[in-house]
Each structure stands twice: as structure tokens, then as C-alpha cells.
Image (tube, rainbow, N blue to C red; front, side, top):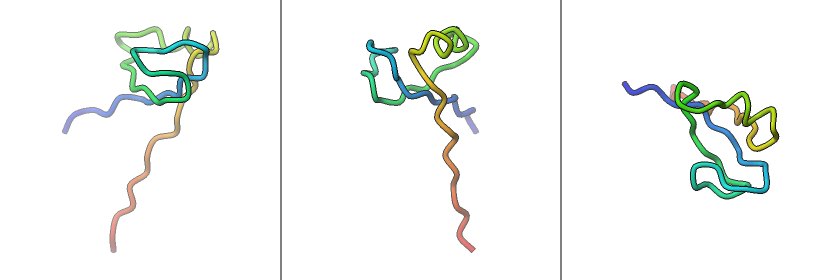
Length: 55
């Protein structure tokens, strides 16, 4: 099963990886300096999606 990348909301004034402000982008921390983007106010973490398992 492929690993799910962490998701971030674009909160800065410019697009990140082609995603406009207000949108959500998945970024691989091994390829992008996510910490710097968060600290600079460009993105913020989005909580992981929770799947409900039917009983």
C-alpha cells in the first residue's frame, strides 16, 4: 500500500506546487523543506483524514 503524504493548507499569498492559497497540497518532507515553509507562513499542517470502519 503506498504511503500517504502529509497534507498542508496553503495559507500564504502565493501558490505552492501549483495550489492556490486556501487549497490543500500534499508534500513529501524528503523532497521539500516543509519546516521552512511552515515557519515562513506559507503552509500549515492539515490533520490526517480519519476513515470510519463500518461495523
